[in-house]
Picture 1 (cartoon, rainbow, N blue to C red):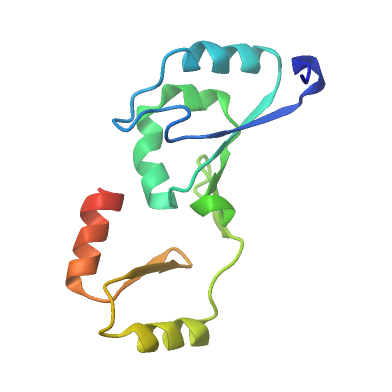
Picture 2: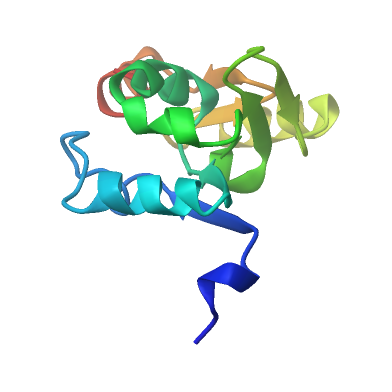
Length: 136
């Protein structure tokens, strides 16, 4: 087992780790976060959520004040600074490849692709589903 004193950084997932499906902080999390912060660990948040979703939930989670301002989003593909609102995209799909994917799938499937913080939907139905399920 690793001694806490040997650690300098802790990285946490958000959904199902720190909060439940209703965005409520899970039992014991606040105490644990405060304890780690008091031990001078740098705390980071990593999530599969996109930047828009993170911007929406940050104001609801007071304990994030103990975390470093940079949040790892989109399963590690985007860094979002919650203080400066700077977004750094690590990888994106080349525009010509994106156009080829969109052309190949046109009419064959309902889908949404997020690339460079923009969403591309194959139909209004796909865009509506994204909005109600993921964004809203």
